Image 1 (cartoon, rainbow, N blue to C red):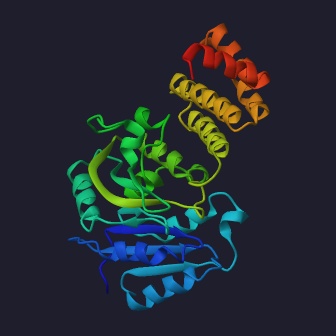
Image 2 (image 1 turned 90 degrees about the vertical axis):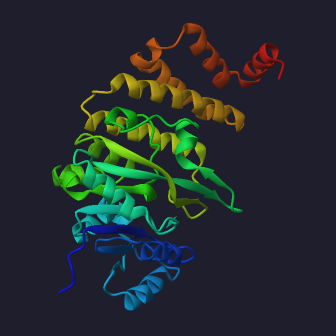
Image 3 (image 1 turned 60 degrees about the vertical axis):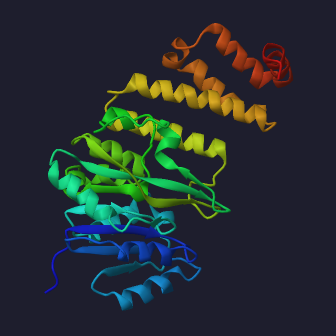
Length: 323
């Protein structure tokens, strides 16, 4: 009988034929003193991804288990894909990596499990990653969010509610912590950011400052190459859900971030020559009493001018800044 896995690698993939082989090679390169398994869920890819996964599974049957869909589950129901793969994993710990990302540190899993074993209070542990763009340019993911000086850990739930600075490919969490939540809530945690917030309610989380993964930003990415306003809308909705699952405990922090996103969206809409698209973000500023209280009348007037009289707004800006 093969040993029961201590850790399960959870990999969700769809139309990643150009990348999935590198992702699997990164999993297989891991050096650990514990057994682990690799669960790959292919969501009815049409580009040959499933065939690549099947080939790896034939060559490494003791490590890789594939789940192959004939109908795309993501389109059928929110959270279904993550529910399917979570039901298949067996490890005490779970490592996340999507099929278009990869691990470049063969000691990643060992280092993270060592940290979690040494500190039972921790709910999860994450490492740093590169954002890799078309053409090969790379940027430090965590420092892109937090700046060059990363605060000393461990982090708590309050640190993650307003900004998701955690690269998914860097995460290892305790499976038991997630299973504390009822199934209906676990389904709503399909989006990684919401899952980190929920996990952090069960204990702090640690950061290992090592680049262990590459997060690819490409045209086929589910989120990474969406339009900027689409990303802002998604983040605004996630902030609403975070407020709900944290029972309003961080309402002031979340309102501050919501106001920041509204301002950003209005400026982007104007810069793109579509100021009318900024109207709904302006409405959010005005109608939400919590946001409105944090802004001066003068500031709100400035955003009203940008949305309704963008040419005048740009002239005022040039007069003030000389640009």
